[in-house]
Length: 199
Image 1: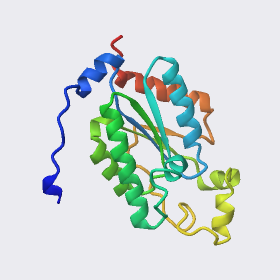
Image 2: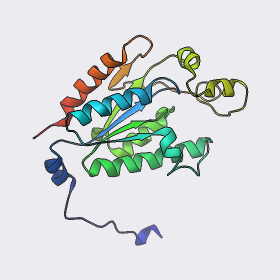
Image 3: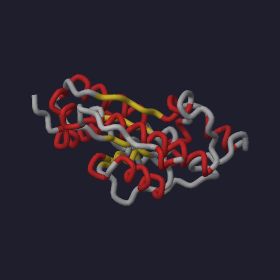
Image 4: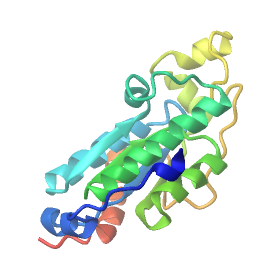
């Protein structure tokens, strides 16, 4: 059946969209434990870029799971499929000329490598929000750690499912030691080197 799928070639290509928008496009992938501060930092970074006139779009774990991936659970297979779909969507947005701000736990190195392979290494920036488990659990913003400890949630990352730290992220943030605004300054300064703003 796959043999009958022939992708269409459109007149307007990624380079055309880059010229129209005035900057390059790529994915900024925030990874870290639940409660680490990924979504907060991602939101702040997107606002900064938006204010600079950069075309952005945000993808976040709970938001995607409430729509596109609402048919998926949290088994190993479903988690991998969740990330595969997100990576494919992110790639489409990159080709449309947007900076994608993605915030997902994405706990396994193999899955993050798989995501990078789909999106393309040159278009993938990895930001590791390295907040210790005890800090995330103390925050427990959504009350999920309490439920996981009580056995109400299975396969919860950091409790009964592993989180593998990235070996060499582009940027590492310790939200327990660094002010959020300072972290965002560092991230945006780094991203500006890749933006290639041409307007």
